[in-house]
Every structure is written in structure tokens, then in C-alpha cells.
Image (cartoon, rainbow, N blue to C red; front, top):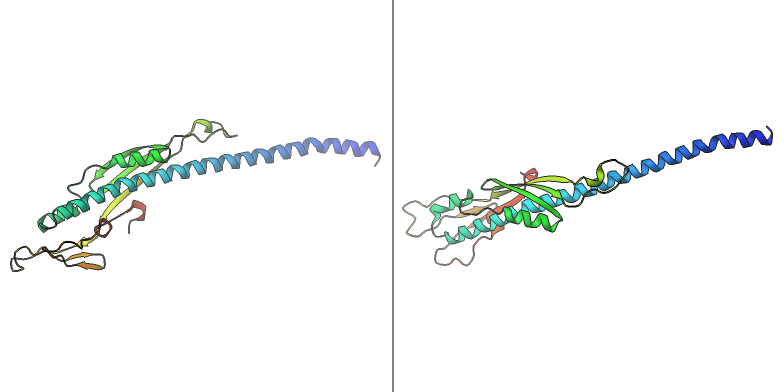
Length: 199
């Protein structure tokens, strides 16, 4: 092979090399775009989870406060553990979504459940994938408030003012109406978790 043949081979290989390098760069940028979208989506999901849990926790605290107010009237306990007496805490979901640079739509379909849809305020951004520059990630989460306690109402022979024993998970609370300094805390009375964590 003479020198001119070697130069011709090199000249023919160069466009192929450029094409391969360009293809690899495009793939790298495409993977970067997918990574950007995944990070944006993860941020939106975090915002949705936090927003739903914040609303549910606020309602849990309201219910626990209501139970303390009515602790001497055990006939009201069941409706409190069923979610009666608390206001709608969707404002907390909106507040927490804003802290995570997103905005939320919140629904309170049941007394012990919150459903939140979140959209990130920032778009995915420019990338080699057309149309992503204006796309904003969306996510949803549902949080539930689970009553943890059971009790039996006292019968007529239990004495005036007697309170039932409250069993919350593995702990029994013997409540003395004359000394109510040791009462269950909100997290003893109710558990708050995401719906996909339901047990």
C-alpha cells in the first residue's frame, strides 16, 4: 500500500469517527435530560409526600386536642377517633408544597384522609429532548390518619366518673379522672403515614 492509499483510508474513516462521536454525545445529553427529569420528578414527589403528611399531622393534632378536651366524657371518644371535630387542614398541604418550590391541590375526601396533587414551579429545563424546557413535574400523595386506640365504655357498675382503660398498640392507659397529668400524646393516639405505607 502506498502513501496515497493510506491517506485515502484515513480520510474515509474521519467522517465515520465524527458520526460516532456525535452519536455518543447525543446519547450523553439524552441521558442527562433523563436525569434532569428524574431529579425534578423526585423533587415533586417529595413535595407531595411532605404536603399530604403535613395536612394529616395537623388534623391528628386537632383530634388529639379534642380528645383531651373530652377525656372525661368517654361517650365522645369514638367519634373523635373516627375523625369528628377537626377542621380541614389542606392549608398545611399548600404551605408545605410552597416550601418545596411547588404548588398543591388538596382534597379531604374522608375525615382521616388527605389526597394531594403537586406540580413543581420550575420546569425540567432545556435539553436535547424537544419540549422538555417548559415541562413541570407532577406528583400525587395520599396520607391517612390511623386511630391506634381501643376501649370499652364502662358499665353502670364501674362507679361515677370512671374512665375506660385505653389500649393504644401495646400500651394500656389507666386514666384517673382525678389525676389527668399523664395522658397519651398525639402520636400515641393516632399514626400518620402515606397511603402506600398502609399496614
